[in-house]
Image 1 (cartoon, rainbow, N blue to C red):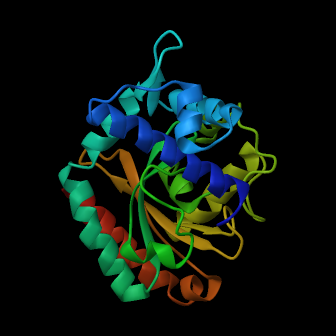
Image 2 (image 1 turned 90 degrees about the vertical axis):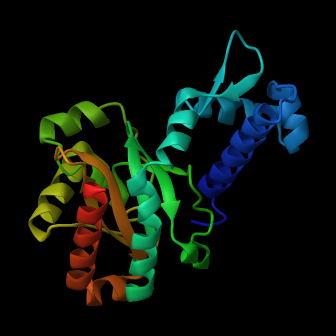
Length: 251
């Protein structure tokens, strides 16, 4: 995945968000598409497309074709980083790293996308492009499918009806709502999502939902690694993820 067009888009999108928000925090003049393109040394058409996607996500906003500023989703995401359970997740993820030697992530859902809130300190070993704020599909990632744990088939149909499945994800990615539903039906009895090469080649992700005190799914915690590392310790990984999810959900 690293070095792929999608990874490049994510990196460029994060650069764009950082430049806009840094200038706003510093009280400097806000910039439009052409000025951002010049500052970032990127093609204007590329900046325009990325900025529109970020506006669609609510991470940026633009009033009447004026300069860009931080959007409402950026502030809600920043605020969520100060919530107790999100702060406590850092220790939980590092405990998973220490026990299994695997990368760990904490994610939330935004429509059909998954937003990465936190990643473990060993994340740079593989897939180092994954930084807080990274966006991935909900239907072909372990974290994403864990966030869909309570969705009925009718709810999946409604959520994913406009999704273009073609060309997205890894070799085992679902290509229809029916395939997503079948994967969920397969994983629920085992108690965790096991996404084998659904988003990246040679990467397996085991994930479970985190529930708030009311019982609703609010986030997902996951570990990522190679097939052997995940398969040989699947039972222990499931137990550790569920224990971490319970502690975070109660926080």
